[in-house]
Amino acid sequence: MALTLPTLHPGQRTVWDERARFKVLASGRRWGKTLLGSLACVHAGGKGGRAWWVAPSYKMAQVGWRAVMRLGRQVPGAEVRQGDLMVRFPGGGSVQVRSADDPQSLRGEGLTLAVMDECAFMAEAAWAEALRPALSDRLGGALFISTPKGRNWFWRLWQRGQDDSEADWRSWQFPTATNPYIAPGEIDAARRDLPERIYQQEYEALFLDDAGGVFRKVMAAATLQPAPPSAGRQYVMGVDWGKSNDFTVLTVLDAGSGEMVCMDRFNRIDYAVQRGRLAALAEKYRPTVILAESNAMGEPIIETLQREGLPVRGFVTTNATKAQIIEGLALAFEQGAIRVLNDPVLVGELQGYEMDRSPSGMVRYSAPEGLHDDCVMSLALAWHARADGTWWIF
Image (tube, rainbow, N blue to C red; front, side, top):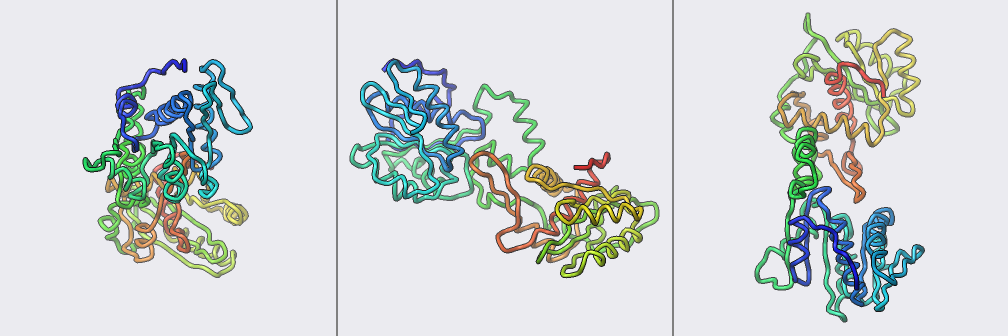
């Protein structure tokens, strides 16, 4: 097979040169996992083997397909079959890109190599029940490549690679910074901009005990009791409107100190009463800005309050804007910049709040299934109103 190898950086070369049957690579974002995995597939297929690139979803499989197709086209006589996401080589070998959406669909094929891309985000059954048996008749190998996601089954495989008694296994942990093609300034910016735990997992490739946790040092910050308004102080307010069984939460912060002075939480009352309670709290604290979620039913309430002369600004919650305000609040806790009420509901929501990253890189923040995050969102809006002195309207 005539294949010109791309230039591999030292970390990639270390993994490439290793001859272990099962290789487990935990690395940070933008380290170069996709290039390494696609090269391994094309190399195996070009020598007459049968290789699969397996991704957690069809959308993610397209990323691998583009990389495999780009390399496969360098091989004279290779046939690219777009519809099957397959490249066939003159010697009879092939590479096919598959999705692990349904792990059972991966059963029954004899393979020379399986590359599992972002496998920390797959069900373990994709490996244990489908791909591992598919490697047995050809004594095939596997390359597991992923950013960590807590200490799940990917971590357990990684641990095997650290055990000298596991002769077939080898594992590595490479932070993003070990890719010499990533500007150091970009990594420094990520360290400044992201909460520590997210940075550690996504850029340092660390396996964290509770990788889904978002807010740290909550108990150290939760020391306050409600406080009345004080002359000469400025206040801001965040509002998360209740929907169906959710709660409406109004949060007031001291704009200067970042201290939480009041929280009003209620549900199962009509919107006229909600407006009245907000207006009463605003009359008491005279906030310079009230940042309120404007999605769905929030917009008409905001318009009514604005007509009544209240300094209400709307915030449209999308996945991107939610990430912005939640990460800002998480940084405030880490840096000790915020102090909040020692309220058991608020503290519980903060401690239980979770982050999940899809294989495509999209970060999602939410309360655990069946629980509420209204206090968290109201506090995040209030903190964003305080931190963003220009009061952007989203």
